[in-house]
Length: 157
Image (cartoon, rainbow, N blue to C red; front, side):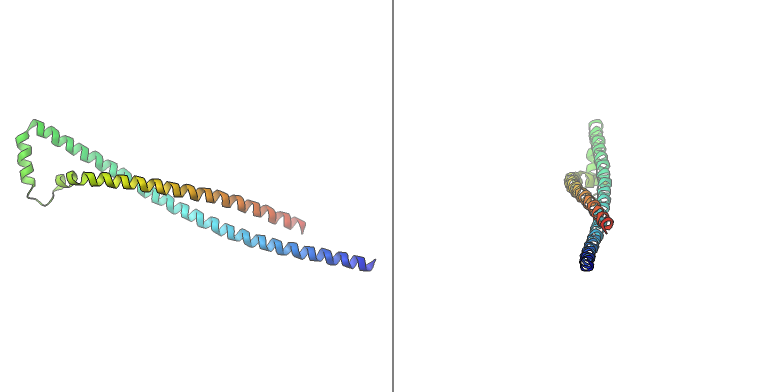
């Protein structure tokens, strides 16, 4: 009987040690997952800041496009009202090293190309952000599951 009690205690002690080892392993896994979650959150913050910068650039591009359009409309209306003045101002502007009007007229296709490029970049960043959000949700779910397992193992101990 004493020997049976001793075997039983030894078995329980072995189970306890195994459970404690498993809890330690789960805690290490949890710490790793929390670190990964933190890194994902940092990446998401960086992606959001890049999106904010791109959004600001898009707004600037839109304002520039509106300004260019307005200047072109002014030039057209001026050329309709006073064609001789527009011709004189065009010939006077040519010798100068690319004045503001010249830069806007020549830059317009480049601005449109830059805007297209920025739109594509925004879409790519939004996709990347969505992937980070999905990974973050999955990580949070896994962390919650690991915490439940740790709690169960602690309760068993």
